[in-house]
Amino acid sequence: HWAGAEAVSRLEMGRALCAHFGVDERWLRPQRRADLPEFTATRPRDLTLDCGGIDVLLGVARERLAEGVRTLRRPAWAQ
View 1 (tube, one colour):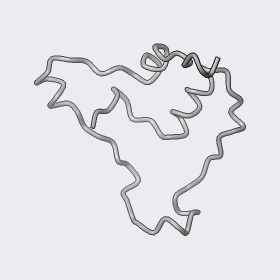
View 2: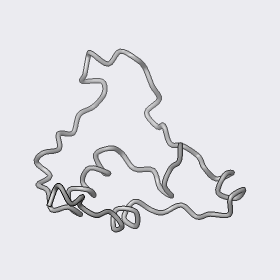
View 3: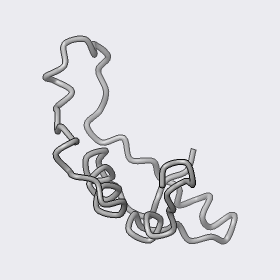
View 4: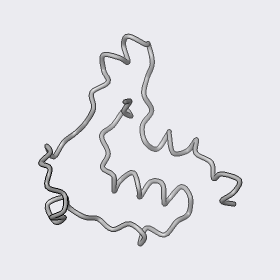
């Protein structure tokens, strides 16, 4: 697993992708895990992955979400 340079929620990631690809954000439906009774597993609210050690070991800098999204392109079949 690998993480970006900032912690973002799934909703924030979805909004960034919608904005980048010109998709209406109304397709996104914010929901809290607590409001979904079928998900019974308990998890911490913050599941941020700390990659600080591997960054130093590999000598890399992770991208922020906006930087990574800018590199995305629509696949040919979806054009």
